[in-house]
Image: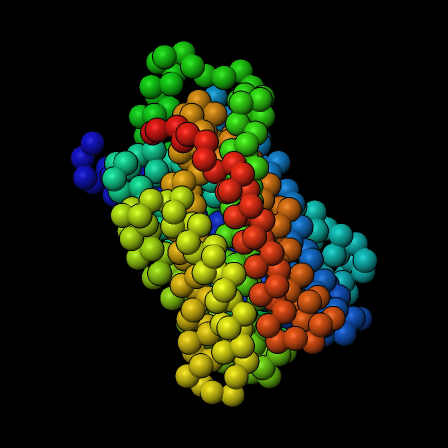
Length: 418
């Protein structure tokens, strides 16, 4: 394979992740504005909580998307399945950009928003694991740790750009119910450009070999449920904790800084942007370092690090010392990157090629739906009920303990070499 073709595969795959998660994360970045458009009669806290709940519903449909697109990805190819995910995401994101608010549709407006969010999550459920699988199957085995970090970094880059756009729109003085719609429209346009680029990509060699050996499964998920249920439980628990701590950084930090620390909106977005930028940088670094120690050992080590260091990180954020504050919002991205970077390379080793899209996709997104997606809403609720500045750490620590328990019980099964 020519170097130019390798770069094209990598860049096009990663661009798809950036675009899809840019559109997916806009809900959190513009939670205040969306809350005002769809829940104008509620107070500020309930508005934000309502938007975070809708944000979380997008994760509920992700396992269905992973099941649907994983089925076709294992039967007709990774490339075709990924083309459909980006097309669907672009259409849904455009519809979100133009949906009328509460003033025009009353109670029907938030109902339609929930439906569109569920559809958005459906397509993202096929995109995230599929794009990771596609690029990892194209990469050399010795590079997969670093590539795994880069894949997650591309997802976080989408959130970084969403936050950056939020800052720019605020600084440009674009206000009112129209302000949050602009980036959704931009995301839908870029999605269609990405669709065009994906048509020129080749299929992975791993899938072509399975085709030639006539190993295509009639119903891949049936094989996964029968032969890989232990692996599914393990990867689901890993998907839950990685997503929850990631969305603390990508979705929860901004409202947390505003409401808990009384930081002005623009400054809160800037601090969030700083944290997300560190997260991206650490992901690439941790992905490379994880190769030396092994993906499993790395995830276990950082799960323990989260248990012991997350509460001190939140305490540092809430201190009156500016340096401790910066250390706190830097430490959480480091902990998250160490756990997330090797997650996909670890997961794909657990499933054979003929069922890998279905196995990784459904397992990981189940963990996201059950544990990860509602992390911002759960953390908001914990803050309100406990009045403890570090209470968001409780939920993440619980998920880390769940993952370690499953790892202790199920993690010793022999991985499938790829």
